[in-house]
Image (cartoon, rainbow, N blue to C red; front, side, top):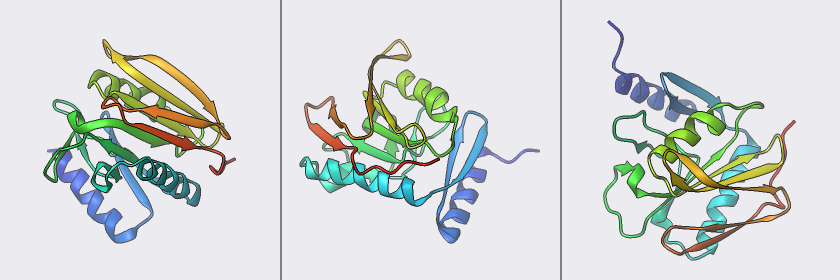
Length: 181
């Protein structure tokens, strides 16, 4: 008899806490394990710093926390920007104003297909995919009927203007983002 998915995910998360430097994400019927590189960590930090510099409260900007999606696999966005006023330690897709994913592998199909579809289907207002291999960032907004109606492409060096559904604005400079080969 196969193990329940939540038991496997919790076991893998416990292993990651012990080992460090590993990220686990559930993608459809797969568990994806990836190493976090220095490029990944510095980019993650740059996003968090931009969000905090914009005036968002610390508790609204989280990195690598489990977000529940009712009826679907949970996600662990690299950076989650939450709505103001939410309470508790359990997070739901309804709490997300923006999810940020940093591509971990060249030719990544998870961030650009599966996660994009799930975030849009679940009504996450903004989804930012940062690709250090291409040196580009895709900002997807306005989810409609399971897809994002708006897509803006930024190249490294530009400043991303991320307007949240609550009216907050986060300017994310990409001029210090490192590339990967």
